[in-house]
Length: 399
Ligand code: AMP
Image: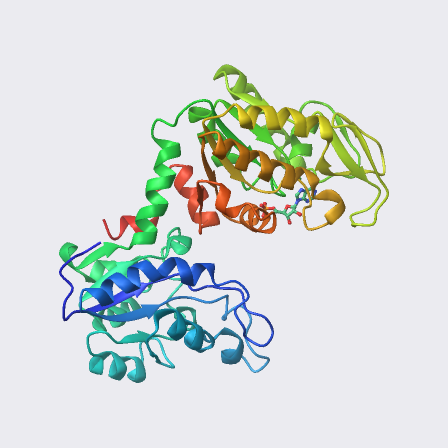
């Protein structure tokens, strides 16, 4: 973080992409909370703050007449809550780089906070448009990127805008620094054994991650929908389970590579199967390698839970990304919540445990164990890409 900000206007890219209900009430303010330390520090130094963020996908969900659905996607909905959290009136500009934003920014005094309208109302945002970025940059003297959740995007507000500032006038914020420091604990000489627990729907989303993890992990525990592509790769029967036929070959390659590199990829020995994709479906337990016709795997079974628990409790470093089953259905949530408990127990035994964003974050929150793990990332996609070893544009543009 920069430390000579007195009297400056500081443009901070935050990730305020929070979930809202149909009346525009914030249902989870985690992302706002996580941005507060940087905002408060900039104010403490005697600067003024200009905040910008995206919210949802406004250009994908236009009104019937082709106009932007301002009511649904405006950041104005966040003003009361943000003002309360900062104990400071937040000024709102109804555009991102228009006259109103410019006038408010121009008049902004030290200690004041301005929130700009949704960056994705601008067509150039997702294209990383340089002209849009130049207009954003004109509003301020200094740029800070604290939007880890959007750091894997090369957008105008996350990356291009940084090119408009000299190296001494741009930096990462506290949240970015914390996310990177925690991710680095996994990438750079992690304490061993290092176990990655990977679940979620599709193996296709996680191929690169698994390849990268083969270089650093001792164990990879597989769960969720992606299990059955691996089962097929081992010539098991999968019934109606989710299988990505195009990826069976790749799954085979990954299993072979793991063996070569002496990494243990574990598949669940047993599976809870259902006769339909529903919470109320008939269910039973069967070996994961022989799922009968007409049935589908929706959760890991009790034997697998036991095995996974032992591996997790014996680990010194744990990464968890993706639910182990369809945890939204209570009857198929046991595996996911069991793993959440094991990760919390491993943490209590001294392991470093990182929850890598997305659905595993909502699972750990739902389980009430969020304060019993080492670190919960705010960025699903960004965290995975970082762990895959990719350079994130939002970080690379600033440092
Ligand atoms: P992802 O976004 O890839 O992390 O996937 C999360 C989704 O995977 C959740 O909505 C889960 O319900 C779903 N999922 C987990 N296990 C299964 C399964 N066995 N079959 C189908 N979907 C699953």
